[in-house]
Length: 631
Image (cartoon, rainbow, N blue to C red):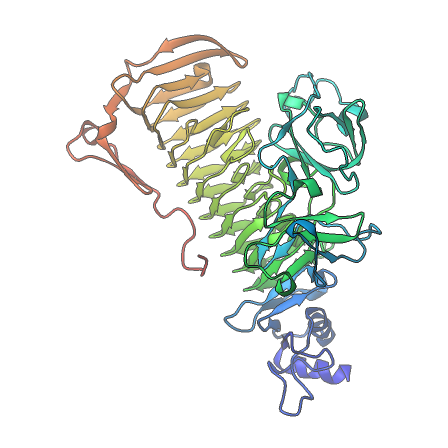
């Protein structure tokens, strides 16, 4: 029977899969035949098995999925032997590959709550941090209801910068596994086995399990180490998750490990016995995994929806980088992810190690960690939003490596940076970014750490709030960034559009920076900068920190209010030594001389700015090109 199936598939090079299929069928038909003896197979794993059995002869190797949801028992793993395979939708409707299981058997509890059994949770063989109800990534029970508690742990050790080796003194195991809380924060009957704790740092956070509580000392002990000690950087915030006391509104849930049940508070109008509830089991849904010297080649994933993954209970580190991707690739070459939707996943959306993948026209959203992590790849025309739902240090798009192309993506609603990219010879161009840096500090719309010869051009960043701490920026070149060009970008409603720290020999040219209040450019511990032909528009003062970091400054135009000043600050390390009034001696125009509409900036005809020959700036094409069908 297997030989006959393989022959049927091999003849056309296509294997069809349907939720109504049968793994004993050939897969050569898109629908069952009249007598019900042949048709599509039922699982993607079976289709891949049959394609492999067909062999590596010339010809197409396609797996076409009909619409519906496919609950995978294990990740779909493609290796070098699967090179050339195409997995995509069989029609216009998008098939769903899920790493979860459907929860049933809901029963009512007191207080309007409902619960369902989750086999393996009580025994510790299944654990998860995401729940999907009727397609919605649900909020977990939390204490406090909003905001965060303030703890009393102190870690007064100097941070020497990442380049400087981190902490001046290595934290002890006790400092990394405990937190001192205030009296009254925690309920006396808190279920330790259920509780998870997020301890906030400056640019990241640690989510860990609770091992025990010493109520006399008001000290909690964690089940695994934090990424930084409690109280580091002067940040003293924490939140407790997944406890019954944190169920304060409909739509929330928690995992009761002691009882082995999922507890949920239905929204108005939801019928618990008719709800579609998915709990994730897998950390990845699809994995392309090559071997050293033998990569996976020419695999194409197209038109699929990927959903429902979980993460282990441990600190995720910077950018929540410790977690897997729902779609994961390593040792891949010339592969393509086209028009995918990745949603409702607890870890990364798409993650690629070592380049070799083109990611285009995808939508990644409602994600616990980062949207896309893809070093050395071409990542273009994607829509990435509402990431970091579980791990607020998550980033919309993470690049790195060498020769990456991060072009024309739209990224919004990120708790930390929208784009982070280190490495060398990258192009970050034409991206539309807004509503980033909503929770954490010391990041930006586009943040580059140790970036070499990277070009940031034609991007449009707007509406980045300053949440305090080390601040937030539009375009941020951090430690060891050298030879970079920030050119022809627009920043609107970002108080610190250009932040530069321990960076050297970079150029900021032909940009337009606009804000309603004071505008600040910073060059802390930096040198050799060229700042040329930029238009800076502010409702207050323009402050330039560490003017000694600028080697050349020419052709810039300042459009300030009548009372606005240009202030140049001399600094020693991070301390201000003196301030100089630079209001005279630089080209200055009135704010009324410029028109700003969407991504277009142009001088008012006949204005002083127009007489100066300001050419204007047009980044209205920032964001995805073409219609990928995303709302």
